[in-house]
Image (cartoon, rainbow, N blue to C red; front, side, top):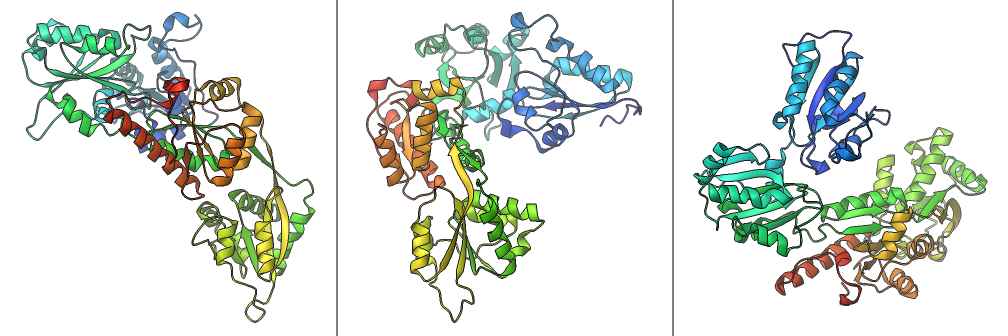
Length: 549
């Protein structure tokens, strides 16, 4: 807080918040806290999507200008008018978050907004963020200093004067230049004219810290030719901001070893995750860790059973001691039982005295979140077959009750029921939920699926294959097809798809690992051959090689 500003009870307060250079994961904990309590969110358009997800659903977000001011209607406030928006909201007693790209301390307009708050006695605080000039080189694998303590100079090419260029040109400091793509060559020319050698190493990074990031290595004298050869320039997008790092720290040989972000195995890959929304979350998080951009398309919708009486009798039987075991074969089954418990005012204590089995790790985690620790999780294959391998046969001496409650989907296979009966158990096979085909995704998603806009698709069951093709069409032949097991792969092939990746185990996380291994091998092969590293969607339809992981 600003200790010198009086706190007028009629006024609100303002948090000037740095949202970082683009990666949502670079928001600070304090930033997330401030966003969660905001009444009004006024954000630079470049970071609005980054910060809005942490704000309350009812937060007010006044219209913000886009980067293309020529396309803005006259009645929409531009960023130059944000001071008025901030002040008006604060005067109305609102908690205002003013989110800016990078760090607010490096934004001259924000400094003016702070002074306006101070002049009116409005309480404000500053939450620093990671500046683009610092965060982007780190993500590009370009350290700005070394053990010898190299000087670092930061310059904005748009406002730099002759004196600034002269000082940079006559020094050997690492220069971090904020500029635009089409102005990089001009900035390099200024440094050469001021005394820097044309062979001084240079990196240029666009869309830094995001999965669209791309970095080129050149020298001050060759940067124009490098960008032209890469077909980056000339471009109608030449006005995009970039960070250029000039100095020995950005040498190509060093960056090849330190480029940790762009060398992730699935960097920039758009990966289709055709699952239910609840099931896709953990898988999407894993894909993000590999550098991918997951796109979740629900192919299966989960609905209550048409007749709830069977489920109601089974839940009452749990309470009255009808069952020795309850077996959960999916996260959805846990959810269905939990919802029925809540309907009756029950909680996890109702499982007292009942043995609980889970088909795999994800189902076990869902149970633990419910407050139930499973007694049995397969030690081997996480499937109905794996569960049966570890399931004890019924023993009338040790098992006072011979009945198992099995809440499942309406389309579940009979493998588990038949196996339990063979082990001597009686089974109440109860429909806990129904699975139905989801609605088709938006038109642009369907077009991307059929037109090769996705780099890979993960199929986690035969039903996801059938349903995706049914609601959205068949993935393009440039798209890498990854399947969780032989049955799913067979269904994919029956639908005319070529399977590139097979999970070594029937686990969604092993499937994601297998896709990452495939991506890493593909990247290594390109580098070894001296070819540029491209995503599958960037390749011509006829140029792919068949492969299987």
